[in-house]
Amino acid sequence: MGKIHVFEHPLIQHKVSMMRMKQTSTKDFRDLAREVITLMTFEATRDLPLKDVEIETPITKCTAKMLEGEDIAIVPILRAGLGFVDGMLSLIPNAKVGHIGLYRDPDTHEPVEYYCKLPADIDKREVFIVDPMLATGGSAVAAVNFIKARGGQNINFLCLIAAPEGIEVLQNAHPDVNIYIAAKDWNLNEDAYIVPGLGDAGDRLYGTK
Ligand code: PRP
Ligand code: URA
Image (cartoon, rainbow, N blue to C red; front, side, top):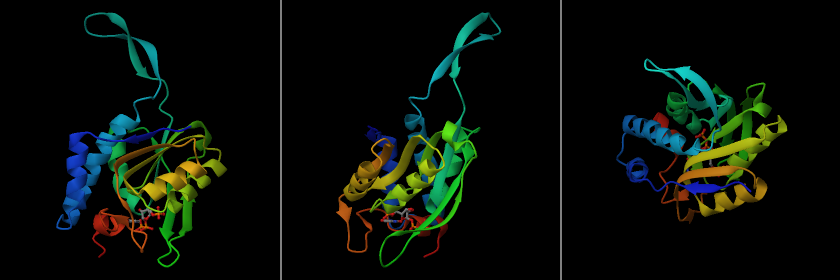
């Protein structure tokens, strides 16, 4: 069973609250997105395996800990997930990056797929899907389906804001996936937007509204 982790760190809570505020500018929203995801990545990578290596400091030889493998893939769901990649790469610069293109049909709220390009060795990598919003859960489930269809096994889902409905849908469809969220909100409204949420994440990141 995958774990579900809700970040309670005050810095994350503060920054997410600033992202929610409707007067926050596109530039500030983007900057905050990078800061929040960097903090979340720090925690979400807590269980990465370490190995002992022999090194030499200016003082002496010693055994030190280093990451066992750097076989990580970051997979943003386009388009809003893209705004979170740089922050993650700042901590794990050798990660490979895949892309999954999905948008929600405005009427049915079902995800529509338009792109998928993943690292060829995705089956051997620890995968971190990133998307700021988990609303109905349709996009998250579709993204995990894509990755599993290509052999991906160790999958984590990072998002800023999740509705209880979306968490349940993702957990039921993919109980093995670890879910990391900065805030669990109240519910979805009749347009399947998260309440209180932050509005349309893609529009807020890219200033398209
Ligand atoms: C948003 C968000 C998620 C999806 C979540 O993307 O970035 O991908 O909605 O909703 P769901 O859980 O109900 O599937 P959107 O479809 O607005 O596309 P965009 O990023 O291109 O704006
Ligand atoms: N997608 C968004 O960008 N925001 C929501 O609240 C729900 C889906």
